[in-house]
Image 1: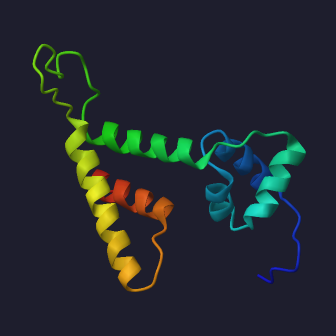
Image 2: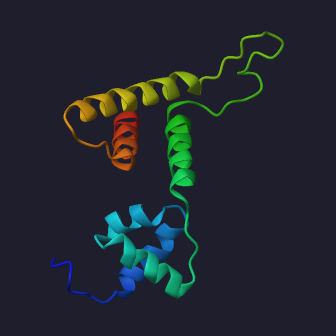
Length: 130
């Protein structure tokens, strides 16, 4: 699509925008709708929809990743009374960050960037077998 041409919003796209805006930042919505981020932000302002911040979304993605891999943390899971607390999600988080840092180092050596959002999405799919 030519970036200079503007196409109007279909009712399906607007519906999708509204649904996605509850959980996703404009950058993710733009990717999903195959539209420029500026166009998505502008439309969100026009219809009065609030933005979800990218950091907020990433935290939710990581929480989803953890919760899909492990049972929710209950007081019986943590060892209270001992100095060392054991959280079942810490192993998953450690693996996640280690993998992300490894990818970032390799990408830096090759002069490329790591798309963190697609990394999170891919990582979640791998972990959940989807």
